[in-house]
Length: 178
Figure (cartoon, helix red, strand yellow):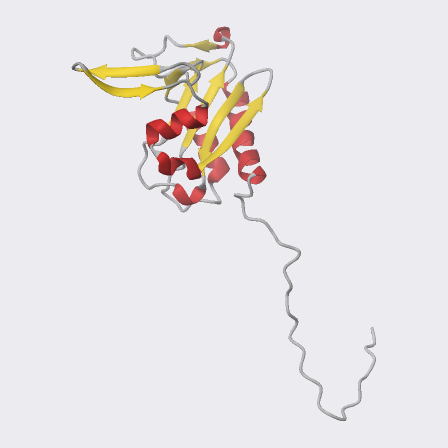
């Protein structure tokens, strides 16, 4: 968890030394400084699940997978169904075959999940998976909209109307509705 100092050693060498920090700072320290500009915050709290984390701006999506992370109660998981909830929220913003970046942390009552369905414990079963799908999909769409990532119609943009110029001496007629 980011608010705890973390260090990792391999063969006696320090690989990571991460001070306590915010979630965004921890992610940027792990993935690199260029990720700071790519992240859009996402937060949602419901009676079923609390979500926090970040989604990537659509222009930074990649053709390869590998930047998609779900955590449930601070444990990394894989879930194709919930991945679909995220990609559906991005579907009109990304070209076909591109995958968005996301790091979504879920906090849920442990009695609502079963972690014993896969030997590596990276796959879990949710009691109310459909509701969690809808909450994730909605939260991602809301973040994209809140941070002006989604396309919008600009009603302030002037649209020119093609009107032929007046010829000198030409009489101006009042328009008539028939």
